[in-house]
Length: 155
Image (tube, rainbow, N blue to C red; front, side, top):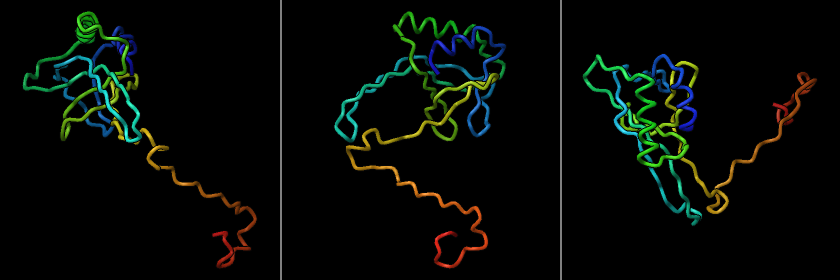
């Protein structure tokens, strides 16, 4: 999800709720402790120089159980970040601690913002010899129910 998308959602949202893919909800008294830009310059395993930039939100829950972040307040935080940091319409990455600090992509199901687990991947499969496993051909078994024999390749 990009900043422009969350701003559109927040403009009409009644509440700001986050939920992880495993169904666990971020407690209602969470804080957004950081909104920033994270840049990453690196070389992949194929030797290609890469540059990534994301908007980063850090969520944290404390012991102030009466705290509730309103949609308008989060919109104000985002607006200030855009103004002060020169933040572009970037993809959002969320940091939140479940068992350990994790980085998540952000989605929305119509009610809740979703913390979507990020996955690692090889970015240069062709350069480092990683290929997808070949797909095996399908055998049409229609009408072969009575003709299957050991070693015949139909089962």
